Structure formats: structure tokens, C-alpha cells
Image (tube, rainbow, N blue to C red):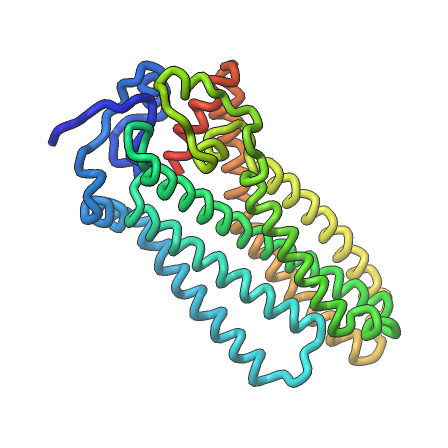
Length: 321
């Protein structure tokens, strides 16, 4: 199988080139990274990607989650009449879970159908390749953030239902609950696609001058020094602190009113259900978020390199994902 070198870009973003991270950095700096010519064959990418157990598991779990949430939406539709604010938040949470499943499937399909082109390829191919990755990565981040924001919304809903039961229906009427859910989705999209607004932040143009080419905007925002993962990690920590405070307050109130009417008991059941969802989300999502953040810190900030090297490191990191 013939190997060729490329000008500083790690072309095989599926990891088919067998070299560790330090080798890739050396190759990047010396412009000697090799790749398999078969990478541009769609059947080769499909066989290679779908032959990885983690990708198969991801596809299966995504499909199961998609079907399960569709079933949940149908159950809500045929079980409830006029929806309450809490039920609307449940629908929003189910939609966000479906969103995660779709983004995972799109991520894998895109890697099969859309190879990563480098600076010697045509501009339109590079634009298509990098912009597709920007879009799908943004959708994936947005889907995870909106799941967290929905849990925040449910925590606030429980708080008002228990602390202000007489004013609850006025505070969380149909219009306000819909506006709150819309705001949650817009904030999530802003965090998910925050890299799109980063522009030329910390972008090193010396690489373009060295190889005499011009990056498109999608290449720039993928290779600059802005990292959406940092903002999302900070948001995750803030949300979990706020939710912990809210549910601690709710727990103390419910405990002091254990003998109240059935309304409190129903609210307590809803709180327990949401807490189970929250714990599951924390166990499954927080470790991955922490891992991504630690990896970014290790890749970018432990080598003592200038901004030019940071941009080069981001090229490698983008292709490792």
C-alpha cells in the first residue's frame, strides 16, 4: 500500500494511520505525516469505521435511544390532555435526547461520506469537508447542552411548584413555559456554535504564508485557539451547582412537610424522577466533559509552545476526534 506525505495536515481523521500523538506532532512540525491513499475510497472508510466496536456500539445505542424517546413522546401525546409546564419540559428533554442520537449518527455518517481534505486539494472540497464538521460538531455540542438546560428548567419548575404552589400556574402558564423552553434552546445553540463566532481569535496566519494558501472560514474556526469545550465545561459546573442548591432546598422543604396533602406527594415523586435523570446524566456526561477538557489542556497548554504551535496542535486534535 503506497504512502504519501502531506504538508502538515493529518489527513486520516479516523485514525487509520498507526502513530501515537507525539509522532503526529513531530510529523506535523516536519511536514512528514503519512497517510493511506485508500482513505479517499468511501468503501475503505466505511469498512474501517464500522469495523470499530465503539462506533458500532454508538450507532446501536443511538438508534435505541431514538426509538425510546419517540415512544416517550407518543406516550405523552396519548396520555395527557392539556400539557403542564413540567410536561412541556419533559417533551423538550425527550427531543434533546433524540437530538443527541441524531448528531451521533450524523457524525459517523459524515466521516464515511465526507473525507477530510487538506491544503493541496480544491477549495470547494476543503470548504465542504470542514464546514460539514463544524456543523455536526456544533449540533453535537448543542444537543448535550440543551439536555442539561432542560434539567435546569425542570429543577426551576419543581422549585416554584413546591415553594409557591398558589402562584405556580400563574408563573408557569402556557406562554411563559413555552418562552422559557425557547430561551433554553437558543442559549444552548449559542454555546454549541460558539466557535462560529470566534472568528480569527488566536489564529496564526504564518501557516498560510508558509504553504501559500488561503483558509476558508470553517478551516479558520477549526484551527484557531478558541475552544468551545471550555465554555461548555464551565456551564456544566455552574448548572450542577445551581441544581444541587435547588434540590437541596426542595429536599429540606419536602422533609419538613411530609404530612401535607397529595399535591406535595405528587411533586415529591416528580422530584425523585428528575433526580434520577440528573444523576444518570451526571454519571454519563460529566466524565466525558472532564476528559475532553483535560485532553485539551494537555494538548495545548502543557508543551510550552507559542500560538503558532497551538494552532498546529488544534489541527491534530480536530483530526483525532
